[in-house]
Length: 630
Image (cartoon, rainbow, N blue to C red; front, side, top):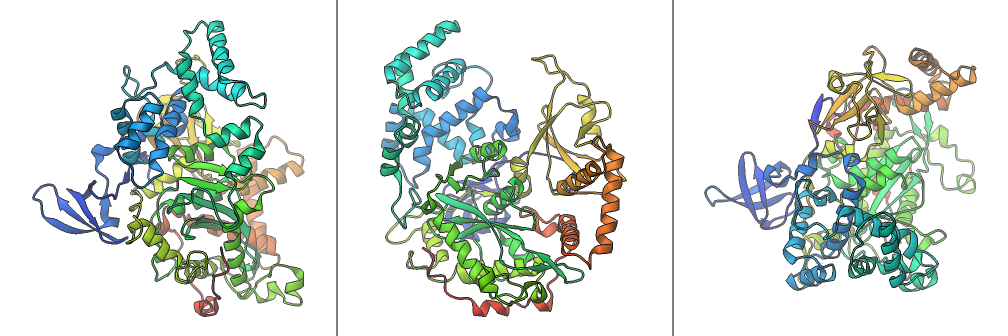
């Protein structure tokens, strides 16, 4: 993360649609034409002159920012969050289409008993901010655009729908109306009108209604895609699949060039164009962190990433997808990841169990990449039979940095450029047509571009709640303190009169720093160790140290004991780095974490990446065609 002491949250992206306003240096321009992925033509609002502008040098206009952009996700109350989600579900149908007219807007407004102007207002708010937080109700007075019943009633209706209507009992709509009325009577709440309850039920997606009400076969027959197709993947970033796999190659450490083990690849693929839109490479097994890093890499522009990895190619991909399609792994199901996706209007879909056709696209791409990896020195191949007498450890030659350079070259200069059988063109060509259009089909336009790439990570980092004591806060028996915490020492919650809990976010790869969200200043503050002399470490190092102490019978170790154990372990690892693969892997992890290399901050790496002659990328010349991917 950043070394800044504090900063405000800023989620407002740069809207790159024709007719929108952007800022270049201190001047405002109206976008008149999109030239390519690098340039636009803007008309100055001060003197009317046209100017060619580089997209990477643009920034959003501050007036377009919403006050809600400065709120941490966890500070939004459940009722407000439900209202925002309901509003998003109403405008979502319109957002999913590149073009829509007043007729479509009026139709949706009438279906939900909402004024057409209100619906346009919601759409404008979401398109400006790029996130669902802009749809959270304002606090002062009754705002136009709120549901026409109080939040308490809305919450009650949703509760009854979820727990009573959407069940295998298949109760009728009228029975649901009566149940809402009954519970309102018990809680001394004025019941909503029957038509209001019916409209909420009609707003439920048919697929969800069939599935939850015990009609799974009917839902499967109606909504299951045929082989080779994927539902609703009609344009770029409509549906992105993400999956993990261990790479079939042994990598070596940076210092001794001795074997470490196999890295994990987390890959994101756009279904419509087959473009790789993001990835993350790590020696750690899949986790919420690797998933968050992959999504962050997908969303941000990649010019700096290409410079970092010495790749002379284009990768003109950025923006949030409408849907992320994943398997049922625990990392995909974390509440923090779900809410982070919902914030940016991402529909998170899970692959139905025992339905391999739903994950075929990204899995086939990963399989094809693994075949190319089998040509590299140190490959493990895909089976013992294929490996035969090949000694993977003995032949291992590439470091993680060198392998990553090879991988990025493979993606950008080979895979994206070769014709794809099912597309009839290359993925990059399909992407360009999808964005800018062609003679036969309109494009969707360039996705909003997030200017503050680094701060985006905070929405996806794990959340921890703590009270603030006079000594600061304690997490995993480690103390943290900063003057930013002083105003909140022993603060009470104004509602419960108990000690108030605050939001902290932590990057598991570097737990020497926390990020504290000040609820009044609407800023994040960097909170370091209370003892500044302590060494930095990752969460996995801390867990290993605690495990070692537990094995020694110490189940209540304090901070000093944990850190002493960590120091001792590092000394052992340093001494054994040329002896065992496990020790070298742990040391390499320390090296990787020390670089603080992130998709959102690639050019601020604290340790420069060097490419060895042994990792020569002439291997790219032997890449086979990717036409077998469907």
